[in-house]
Length: 287
Ligand SMILES: [Zn+2]
View 1 (cartoon, rainbow, N blue to C red):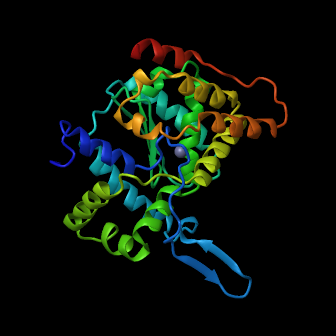
View 2 (view 1 turned 90 degrees about the vertical axis):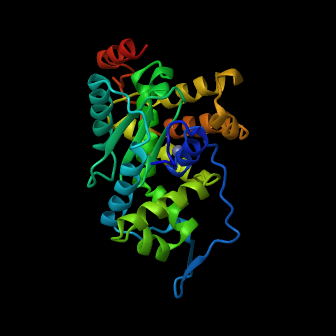
């Protein structure tokens, strides 16, 4: 794809945004002033359309697959079966402790040092090798993956896209049978969504789901706090263009506070692990 040429960093960055969760995202709230409202007369339930899921799992999976097929053509996939297998095994283990287990999750390791992870609709989760390098323990890495699973559980990708484009457009174009049209529309969306990010509500939801998943899976959820402390301590020099754009929202401390409060609500549990020999082996390989 010309648009996603590896040499074309700008477009590459733009496309990253569409894939929804940027780990650096501050919870920057998308403007809701123009949002349509859905009103259910009778019981006075009023919800913003951004919080309503209007798509079946099948439709979400189709859209996610369209994205994934388009996206990975331009990405440099980290080509080490041991690393891939480790991330997939860890990811699938965490999925088993989520409350959306009926879809197939796909974990892809991207070969870039940008410290980032993100989720596309339909269970497509991308973890940059730079993020794995930055994590000191398995629980820190797992906390990020758990957070991304949280976005999939909350169907946040679909909700964001619905909010931005409307149900009709998505159903008629992106989910249509005309593959050339689908491809063209995805291109348009990618160039248009530069500033679209998850809401604070979605970020908190994903943080909260991530903590619960780790706890239930027997992994120390303090890894989430530790990871954000690492992010907080990253010097400006290490920030990339994408990170600089997002780091204008000083939210690390707020996020750490929220995650800590979530952990504090959990009953004490013995034997929560922070590390594994598999993680250490992967760290040796990617050094
Ligand atoms: Zn997120």
